Amino acid sequence: MCKATGPSGSGVQRSKKWLSAPRLSIKRRFGQLRPPFLRFRSWQLLKPLAKAGLHPTTRVSRAVYTRAPTRLLSRLWGLLNEVSPCDGRVLHSGRTRGSQIDQVKGLSYSLENFLGPQDWRDLEDSGLPFLQQLGISPSNRLYHHVIYLAPGDYHRFHSPTEWSIQQRRHFPGSLLSVSPHVARWVPGLFCQNERVVLSGQWQFGFFSLTAVGATNVGSIRVYGDSELRTNHSRHVKGKYHDCSYTEQHGAAGLVLAKGDPLGEFNFGSTIVLVFEGPRDFKFHIKDGGRIFMGEALGAP
Image (tube, rainbow, N blue to C red; front, side):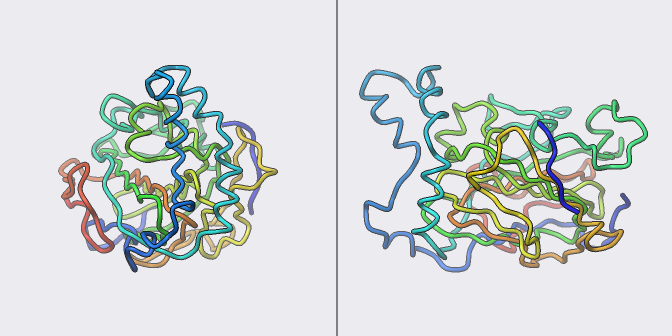
């Protein structure tokens, strides 16, 4: 059952102890064929500010950029652009610090704001620390991995591991650029943007995959979820919309194998993985490195 809400289980036993990237590459370079007038980047809105002597990190520049009509521009762009997958780049990965995630070096945001209240879980005490609400075992750690899909191409994303999705939460919001240039100076960028959070369990415990919208992203689609509607003019920022996959698919939720098709962006954006893992988990790809479908992110 899916429902709208106000402002913001058991594990699956598997044998393979490694994590591979969502689908980030099928066809390439089609985006290079677009005529110049279609190569819009929202950060280009900052150029007039720079010419006027305002540095992008100033409060005035941020205010102007974050109030730009990027949702409207993105809906219009979605009518013009289809089907052009490309590769991704690791924006940031590592351990969480308490319930804080690094956006980039020097900027962080809270998991509470990013994932939202865990009121869909059967918790006896809703006042527990957030990591305990997620069910993180004291013997494990929580990790995050952010994959940036450069603008100009269409993307599908696949299941990065074997897991079961129990809950989908859709946050309407802004559609600011998620490029590394913007991520360095807009605090809480991923918490401001429209996003779809898929939460569930894998062999080590909690696992989530979040598809974050961005400028020119006309839609985020999750296969099999016909009720999901993103970037809609009637959506109200500050509310979120829940959908229980355990009610739709049974107690285990939506069970996916590694590599199963999961969803798609209409134009490219960012995927954020937040997951529980053993203390000796190590990432294979460094920040800024390229990553491709099927390539291992890391292993214990």
